[in-house]
Image (cartoon, rainbow, N blue to C red):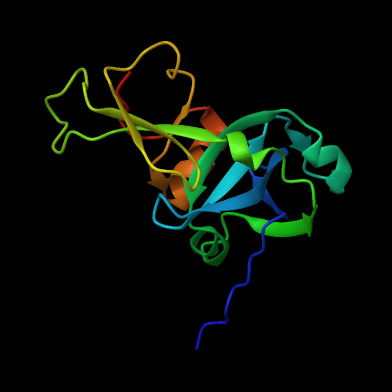
Length: 162
């Protein structure tokens, strides 16, 4: 029987990028409006592999991106591991995402069905993407491998509109 994995808001996780660097992210909320998935904030700074995590230093770093994921899957796959906890989870009231809804998008080059939302709030249809929302992170629930890829390369390994 597999051991139960317990994660709590405030937990900080490490992703080893290669043999030389690692980065950190923090579990900051659950988003009931997006499959009750875990919302994480990934910090920008890369640390050397021998860095001993200082939770205050980590949470005071600039946020690179926010994402939805399933934490336990990444733990089971040894993609990330818990290194500590910090009560400061940032301003979760103003975390906003964007998402399009077009069905089969293999032929699509532009969407007119964009939605935006604050976590745990209803989606708001905005139609065509505007500059006001273009900077927002895409709100899919990403598998652990996609989160690691974005941490390592700056991009998800999948097609995104806009």
